[in-house]
Length: 229
Ligand SMILES: C[S@@+](CC[C@H](N)C(=O)[O-])C[C@H]1O[C@@H](n2cnc3c(N)ncnc32)[C@H](O)[C@@H]1O
Image (cartoon, rainbow, N blue to C red; front, side, top):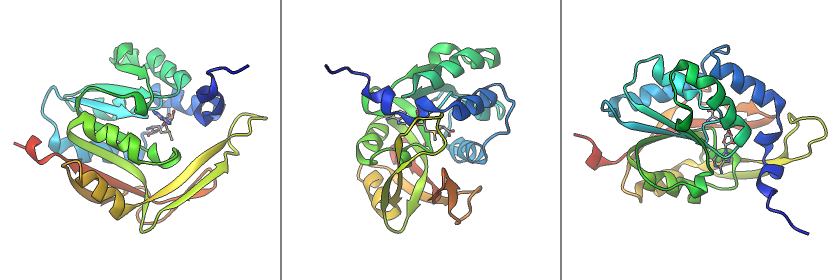
């Protein structure tokens, strides 16, 4: 017998009460804004025209919407995430703050098509198997800019480790990858973007321990030259 439930069964984000509680509090504005969300908005702001669409890829429960909304950035926010229970949290709580529930969708990056003006993707690609296929989707979908925050270093390191912060008796592994900065920047440039690397305000140039493993956070800002007026 086989079944098609492999994705939710192996997906660590589907198995964490801690994450669901935190994301609920973020949606309800009961937790402080993530420093990286504030920084992502400021990196995006110069490239925004009123009415532009911003797609948040791997949005969790979509609380990046608050970071845009509280700064009155005049955009249409959309979010996708592969974990249905996290998307459901956003659909439940964000309408009270003005986000229609259909702006959030359960969708894997690999299945993304269509176009938007801007994409933000924060703390996602470092914890999946590799960056080429998902990043290609993002670069082909964004007409103007892509803002990424990932673990990036001089050289690449790839690990697949047990996540000790999941619900009791859940024994699942997650990727903890640091991608080679120059290689990723060249990859982005090969899709016609001008790309710059920006220090992460929260981490500085120091590693941050997440689930017990170092992450070397940096932002990449990728801009299609033809999109700037
Ligand atoms: C560490 S969380 C980051 C959430 C949010 N971006 C933030 O800044 O707090 C990583 C998110 O990526 C999502 N994710 C993992 N693999 C994905 C995929 N293949 N497609 C879409 N989302 C994915 C997970 O469900 C999870 O919500």
